[in-house]
Image (cartoon, rainbow, N blue to C red):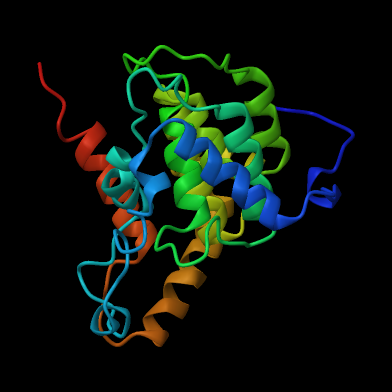
Length: 233
C-alpha cells in the first residue's frame, strides 16, 4: 500500500497533451515498434453492427491487450523502450481522458496496461534505458490507476489487484473493502457486502430482459480459464 500526502489526481501537469502524445509516439518510433508506424488504426476497431449489440464477443481488456502485444515489440539494436517516459506520459493522458494518438483504435488505458505488462520483462533486446520500476509503480499507485499498477506488479499480487479493480469499478467499494472481500475466509465475513451485491444484481435484471455477460464478467472468466482451469500437474 502506498501512502503519500500528495493528491496525484489534483496535480496538474504543465505539459500540453499534444506534447505528451508526441512523447508516446516518439518512444515507439525510436524503438522501431509497429505501433509507431500507424498499424494501430484498425486493430481494435469494432464494426457498427458490433457496437449496436450486446453479444458474446463483448471482450475484456485482457483480450484487447493480447491483440496489440506484437505491435509493442521493439526492433533489435533499437535500444528498446523508454518505459519511464512512456508510462508517465500515458498516465497523464489517461487522467485527462485523452487519446494517445488521433485516429487510433487503441484506448489509452489499454495501451498503458500493455506497456506496463511488458515493462521489466526479458525481451532479448539490449535495453539502453534503465527502468526505474519502483518510482513508476509509485506514480501508478498514487494516481489510483489500479490496472496499470497490477500489471507492473505482475504475478499473484498483480492478479489480486486486478480482481480488486474489477470489484471497485463494479460495486463501488473502496480498496480496503475490496481487499476484505477478496480475502474473506467465510461467507459470514462477506455478509456486509451481500446486500450491496444483491441490489446491483436486481438492478441489472430490470435493465436487461436477456442475460449477457458484462465486460467484467468476461474478464473474471478469462482469469479463471488462464490461471485456474489451465493448471497442469
